[in-house]
Length: 606
Image (cartoon, rainbow, N blue to C red; front, side, top):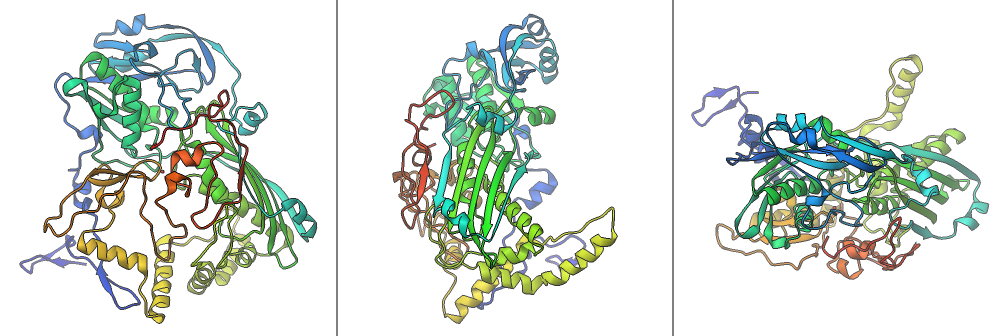
């Protein structure tokens, strides 16, 4: 379709300023928002880490990563590598002026290997050279003598050997032991989910330059600027105010650059600090895939019981999380698994336990869903097995057990404004699942090489749900509070700004990795009509609207919510639902418990 320019001439190029109108059921109309970076993306004018002009005298870093999954280091020979023309210096843990530690939740992650290698790809030394080619040549000449140790890759084996990063966490509601006797059908099984590579288009990297008064500026491809700042300051042994972290934009992250960007920023920061030169590191794709963590694999067991009407009476699950060699964000991911263990179903009797298991793999980390998909998958696997054994449709079991108004989650929250049944009916009406299923079954019965299944566009389902909510509010003479309030804030220029509105690393409020807001710099609006209200650190704005199930309370850091790192991970701290006291239980250890696991995080550390 052709568009006309300002002079009325036809053009084959779409008019990027033209925005289609969207009309909602309550009579309002808004222009769809345009991505401000679209034209710059397709013309290559955006500045990513590797596009930053380098300063004169910039050196290039390259880690030498361990060639073993688990071993003691007997000897490392750097002589041949150091003699390569262009190599300036090869740094080891002995050159670190501060602490050789970058672990955020648990202090169990050395920046560089000291005596023991914990996974294949763990950084052992850092080569700094005048070119990337010289650094790569030097890396191939490093020799290391090792004493190999037993390797663990299975989280179940890790649990058996007591290799837990933190104590197990457990959610209980009702009494599953007593409930089994009242079940007409009981099924047990195992469900495993594998890892997944983030495969962000822009690989990990950082660029460090010294500034005045012994400070350092780090340009980093990170989702967590504060995490990078903390790690660099810790390694260099300098105050945090002397570390400036700059994030222009990210070429993808998906959770893979929340905590794991810190290591590479700390390495180039160390090199720049020691050599008094700017140092850059942009990771090769194969190095990135070998040395960084993935989505957490899980190996889980389940037991589920139904009554004669196929209502779920009891559910038990044990989750073995493969955390990798260090904690990273695994404790938070594991908790999210427990929060989503019953998915969108009401189960009166629940007992779910999760184990954070240390293995000799690169430390697994945040990924889209943050542990939720792994928890939901297990109960869906249990429902699928029950449906297969009983000869009924899994959809029928799902529909009968959907959350209702006032349903309780295993951690004590009471569900309100529940639209599960309405959403189901709307989707069923829109897509006619029964007809689709009949067509799919007929095709699969006759095709030996190709199989079909259900797949629908999430945006369409979301728009249908919003339309339904608008219709409900129109009948009541009310507006959808959350979405309408958001429009008003954007028109006036006030209200809380989020990372998505300002851009990662932009001005205004940005989220740290646990979702807490940080006040970086307030902007005055062009008309001078409003100045944003200041918020205390570690407060989240309360959210409203049809899609929000969990109110975010400002008292999270006082133990009244689930968003603050200290209250969430400090052993023995009661976890409370925003709406009522939780029926949560845990096996707690003292805060200074060490060995296979626990260390209480510093306050202020998604």
